[in-house]
Length: 262
Image 1: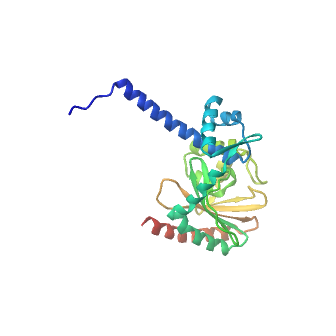
Image 2: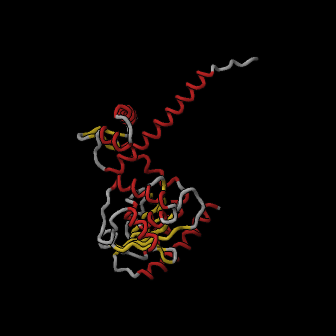
Image 3: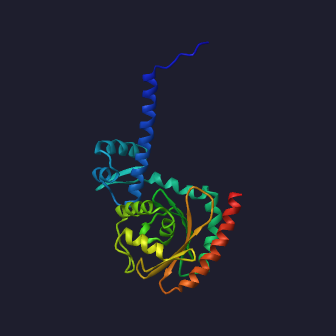
């Protein structure tokens, strides 16, 4: 039986519709990322200016997100809706996160004054796979300004300079440029200072956030996105001691990750 052939114009139109759907999905996710990061209601005009889309396009995307329960319209603009909370379940769906949580919590328990974090740099954002502190439940999925994070900067110094600066600029556009007395004035000086501050594979940031010290070491693990281990606490912590702790913790964490990937 002979199969009917599609007209070339029909094929092109089908491809165009598929591409339009993909673009709409990408832009919708970008809007959700923006609303989550800002933490306040945003008008359609503010969203359009931030994501670089025409306001009519943003209005159509917002209507779809609102109709499906992912965005709510409140006084002052648009905010993430309650349906977004269903994605909190995703943390337990990752074997790597489930495997790391007990160990990172154990390390944090041994350092009651500190936060212990395993982080990934994903599409210009710092994502916490596990963030733990003694006496609290470990959390997953928070983001953070790249310039204030030793984990983010430790990963950025291993990237080509322009790629790292581009990530810092996007982060500054989203979060601003605030910090403690040790924070350099701009992206270029922050990146250069970070590069020069790596010692024995560890980057230490002293008072880049107010009255705190944080240090990070990269994790030698396979995967699409680089990971880093960071410890943050009072700025009185001895730098050399923190280096030794991070190297020991890295060895333990890499051993756990190896069993997950095996």
